[in-house]
Image (tube, rainbow, N blue to C red; front, side, top):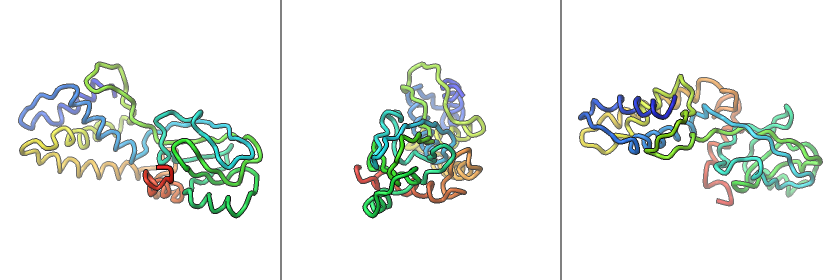
Length: 226
């Protein structure tokens, strides 16, 4: 869905409330607010990147392979060739590295900071690590005319705008009971979409509980460098 169409959908979802006409900047800010939450929690759009590991080092600087907007909680899967690399918390990796300096193909990965990962065992070769992460919302400046496509799959984007961006747009307005009821339905939509299928990656609490559960619990402050 193009941004201009997303604005129309959003305006149509709320204009029955006192028939207020909203400017494009206000529409766009509501879209950004709700759709960022939707992408982060449903993981319905992902991107992948390959990183060439540094041999004989437990510490890997992934800055060159990942875009500046990368955050560790976004990672949903990691593999070397077709061998899974488990997503673990930093404590596990530090303990393993303290107890053993074994080298070989890494089977575990954790993040010490936004750019620096720990791996175990210590890589004996320059393996290619394939990382899959949640895609951020496509960037756009609120209120500016831009030919961009909102990166939420077509089956979900209308509902996400109607039940998420709509309540965000009218939040705080007099008599806007629609906001609280709409947001409740938005939360239900997020749970439904997140549970539909793996969508090609390890879903939270589903099929891949170790990786998804670790990322869900360690979002933000649990990374030691933060």
